[in-house]
Length: 284
Image (cartoon, rainbow, N blue to C red; front, side, top):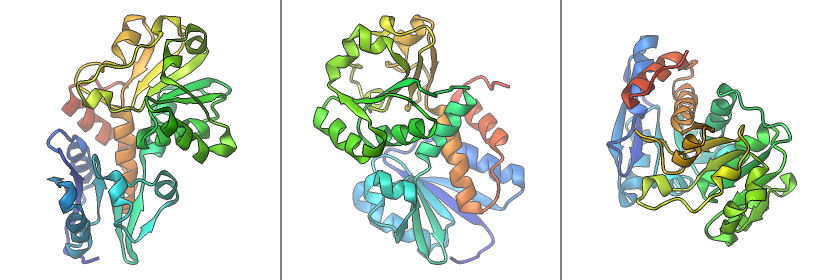
């Protein structure tokens, strides 16, 4: 990697104009007085191989990768970290002397955010809705936190079964989508995670027996938006504790910053910048 004095990092996605990652990364560079910049680049699927090669050619410290590129990026790097290899997806490409390392900080970001929210999952039942890359990252996180019974529900049941097989040692269960309407099943859940793309589309969330959940059941959406997501709205009306993926974005971004720059990320600075940009109150 060339040393030209300025650390250049980026995020590749399509679309990308909505991304808040540059705000928090650039705030971190400023707080640490590091000469660096983090830039958003709209990269189409056909342009991704060229963009990934540019990381090395331009001497960048690395790049984050967001939708729709996470799976394809895993095939374009020289080496995969353990999480990226297991998930088959990359959200962070690090430029190292030996080549491009593909990593995935999503599961670790969710893990840290759930801890920050004060959630204890020991022996609790957890439901993950969605069997894509987000669902896989969610399973990694909740199993690490000691969840008890873990169930995956997906619109296409075969995909849920395929995902569960990757976690065979942890005995992840699968159910069909109509399980969401089962009051008895929903009443057992301590945490419900939405790992689908519903909130990034115009779809409505599948019918769910929200009212049957326990008063201390927590609802977490991997997506984030200016207003409560369609998944979270019914839970909020019932007074259930809820969070969206803004905290996960913060922590996966802080982990990426550390991989890129080999320094500890100023998480509080990044949180303030991110939450201000999102129009959120900054909690103590």
